[in-house]
Length: 111
Image 1 (cartoon, one colour):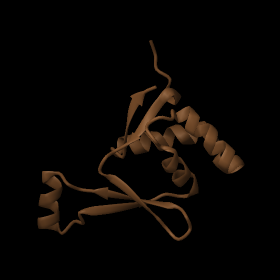
Image 2 (tube, helix red, strand yellow; image 1 turned 180 degrees about the vertical axis):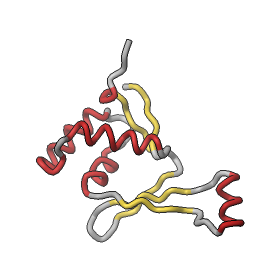
Image 3 (cartoon, helix red, strand yellow; image 1 turned 90 degrees about the vertical axis):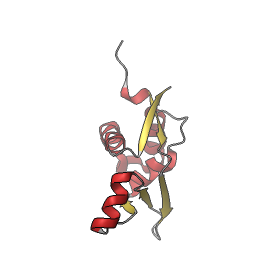
């Protein structure tokens, strides 16, 4: 049986935190705690935390990830809050979640 990506329930990774910028958008704070990261921090003076600034759409989506809502449910709320600014809604939403997943900022559980 084939899974529908919109049925997936995203869960934020435990080592990803966020803060709010002055404009209300979110900045993700990504901790680098692995052994390789520690070596890179010592040898190459890499920062232990990097930041990812989200735009209005990304900030809205991130704020809705609660480990209970599916991507589809998040999409409906995004559409309600942002209207036409969210379009094309589901293609953008799926791409955004693929990026979050690919960077290990979230993981999925089936609803």
